[in-house]
Image (cartoon, rainbow, N blue to C red; front, side, top):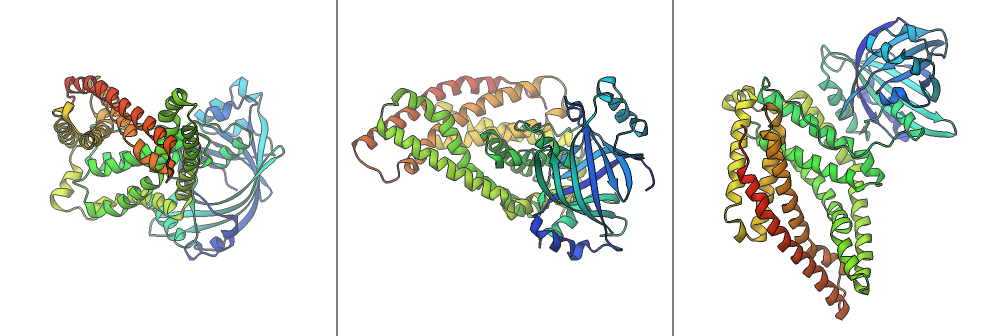
Length: 514
């Protein structure tokens, strides 16, 4: 095998059921330009007992392939919608032990040659995989290496099966990785995989305890066009959604579900912020699926908030009330059912199809397909001009919704909450385009306002949740319990309305920064 120089590896990882591997290997889109090559790959991954490499985002392995030992060092990766992009240095070595002198990438070599790391390297886990590899040329100028992997990841007495399709871009257009995956997914269920084999191996070591992922800046800069800015915002929001998927499915922390809902709102809001000039005909199919997913996650989040935040103080105050305790138990069961429904949606083919379609649309900048005349020109205009117009429009909409605040009905306050949320997301998307602290201060005040309006909305949902929690139950004690819940929620709403006055006043006093 010829020695490879330091490079950037770009590959799309997709999970597949072990039972579908044979069908996958025969799929027409994966036939390739020549014969498939199948080999057994046995890899040993190294780190220190303190996992120093993992903490730096570095993976070090030595793999035996066809009688040759190859050492690979991979740097910290950028992962978005299953697309892994990372620095890689690969070279032949004499045997299964690492040879740090063979690392050509200077940054990676420096990280591994530190005395505290170099002298402490130990084998931590291993993979034993049967890989079928073939080269594909889906369009002129693009070459993709498709690898179908099936095997095991082993660490001590623990083992985990592995079945994946990896699509590595050798040259050409990375959007073709998603296009190819979509064609295969029509026939065989595929799911985007955010974890590398190394990360899965570390998970078997008990080192996989990542917290819920919050929204991260899209990294906009004033030199971007509107189209470039939209692309960056959509990638950031899609990465936010996908990063919380695994934790949400595990179900140990309800914050993962909450962050998935936040990511969904940000995705849907971005479609609105940038429309026009992006045509509704382009966004409508994706917006429909995003709305479907939100409808499946929403009830679970409502029950999570009610049982974690709204109900505990009521239960503490009136815990001796028998019907109230029975109501709490019933709500707990409804919460479990709602969360199970949310997990079914995230495991579904429709969800995985949505992720791939959305990633492909972003990668190919599909919104240009129907852009003509003024819309086409608007997509190429400086994002700073566009941002100022959008922010002023959303600001004025929020101000109008908040006029005569003390007299607003619950329905009108709900519309104000939506207007504030839309303005906050737009502000968050564009804040990095502006210097100074004004944007951060406005975001802080918007967050305060949104939190109060959100809590008021949570209090307003109690009546609907009560209908489900009590079902058709009647009687004196049921009526008393309903009275307690309604009284508490109404009292909470009155208290929050008082807080709302101060938050609104602070918002109105905030300086415009655009």
